[in-house]
Length: 382
Ligand SMILES: [Zn+2]
Image 1: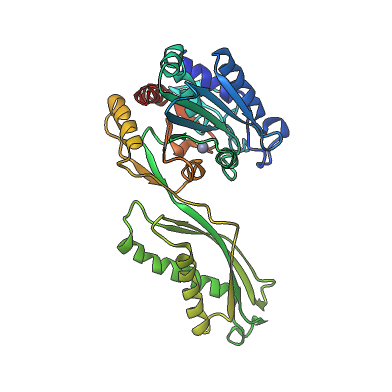
Image 2: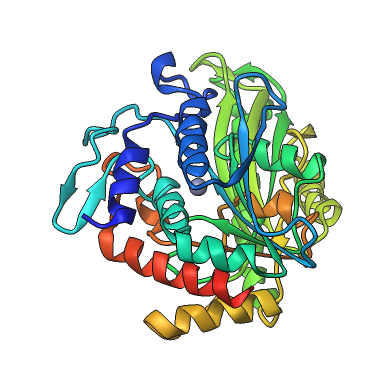
């Protein structure tokens, strides 16, 4: 069994479900996996910082290379997984079958983590120690719910000139994430008896008109944006009505709007206000309120031509040929790190389509290719 495969099996066997997921307490928290990585790093004589800014939820920083180095590279990987509820495979057994390894975190994010750890052999350690590069390996908690560990590291100044955020990207560079804005629209109508709908103003119907208008207006996206990189809207929660014989005067709708760097959040909200104002003017609605839910999650964008992306591309090219950089609707720790690191890219083995699934797996070939590419890339930075 190769080192990377063995490491992945060991990592899968250590539960590290995000504690904000309601799983059994014995499976939650990131501490156990940090202990495993700490032992691994200590056995290699590497220096470690245990960064527990939130009690019980440590981050771990492993550093190689001279403190006085002029260049710094961070490779970051999150240690938490999503819930193991309703999985159809044993989440912690790390079953190997048909060239795949199954289990929670197999691709998100223990596969990429095993890839990173497998790269750090004695040859690479010696090369980095004798170079002008400081290599920082950041193992962060809480990515799946709020990118918490990454925000903590950035807030405490743990960054680098260049950052590679490991996630299952199919070994192609991810150079952008959409931002995410969540808001609730409250529709107010006029209550009345269901036998005379013309005398009331149905708030649920108003929500229906609104959703239709939003979808119709989205045809404009085709003009402003490209097909593969455009905003999106999803209607997630709708609540309204109190009885089949009553015209509802209240309805609320929660909207998830993914936005791009080229958009302005205020203008995005304004476009929805415009639709709602028109519905009021057309007597389809009495009044409305828009309530933004928390702060919008920021986007991330890296220049496709940046030195970091180009150098990663060269390493990818050596082993698997051309892989086109792309953007994603999902987000990662690249969002906080891009506020502090000059250059950030997201990359790693495995397919995001298998992340969070009931039979999560990673192809073993992805792991070994990932290891070769990542090692080549780290050496290129020395
Ligand atoms: Zn992930």
